Image (cartoon, rainbow, N blue to C red; front, side, top):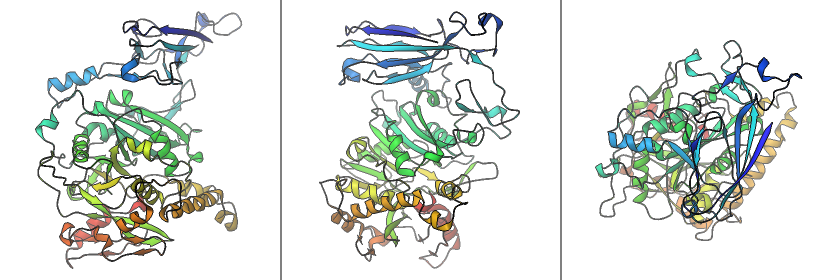
Length: 574
């Protein structure tokens, strides 16, 4: 059953609606669970009546003008997270008070926006409209929340609305998730001025595509646990999972995430993994979860971060010219027997992307370890930019102004494009006027091996195992991949409408030091215009999943080789 309301609030700067719950004066901290069949909740025919059913779901649809402005028009729906916000244990009272005041999310009533939430759990209020009428249609769905059987130890279950939910950590046979490692690397350096709370500081949107990856929840945990100001971090995650099963991918769901940020600052989109077509579609969908945050960090779903990463990235980007992107291949982390993250030597130096080799006509890139970690001053002084100019772009770690989404959004039609994704984005961004820089210190760590998760390539092959080789070679995925590669080859040769007009593809090739027509890497290109002493005294020349060749430039320490093999794998391991 449903009920409908149309509400109009005048733009007088006063009219609104105070904080309340659609199920009563105060919302519950837990779902209001009732028995599956209650005698007093049925009529004589055995059906629930309006008087016995309660509001379960609230849906609000906005009919505001198309140019509605969050600041000038106001009228936000302020949504409060259920339960009391915990105080941070490691910050002073001033910062704790600031976080308590941020314990909500303001949904701006943009035209054609639909907001849906649980009527029995979410308290909310309507903020005053400042200059124009705010019109909205509200629909309430009535019913009862019924207790469900967890399935005798299953790791996940389906609730009364058919949504897959994971088992709580304390119910699982595994230990609860902990993103912070036992021996974390040192925090990133920030100045005293940057360490102080700032009410006007910018917000960061973190884009995460996740393909059946159980490391995703710990990646999200790491983001919030290590951020200096987690209330300013907003995550958009695209879950590519098995939506038809309650248990197959339940381990991939987030749980034991830091409160309240996991409730107020995480936006999600679920896509059945059988409909997934590679990173470009997933990253495009994740970009659609962006909501006016000033900056965007794009990462992979298996990463760990150093403390102060948010303030450090903002400070480093401020040192760069306009239209700059910080990007790199992070060093590696591995999982120990208990599933805890370990970092080889707690490496803190940065890496720079360099051309590596051509394979099947496509340029592959690698990460080279820098010999130092930049200047000792984390703040901008005398115009010093200690970021390192970089010729290439890493899809799994890049930070920039959110203007990049408008200028050069991800192309969702490049299906099954893996090797080629980064080249496509690099030439597009370069021709739109963006420059790439490598931070002098490593900001995070990446799990380059794929033994902890399925891959889309493996899942695609498994669905074709019963077909003949000829049919498998000409599968839909292969056809889409070939079409996507053709698009990228044309971009790199300057024959694409998706390129910008500020610089040319030919200039991009010169900047990288390659010839895309003849698949040639020019001598010295792998040094990226830097002197030889800018790099650590060893070089990795391999790729995940292949028999990597390594060369110790000093002719000595084999430990360096082992360290590099585990730490600097190319995009093939992503």
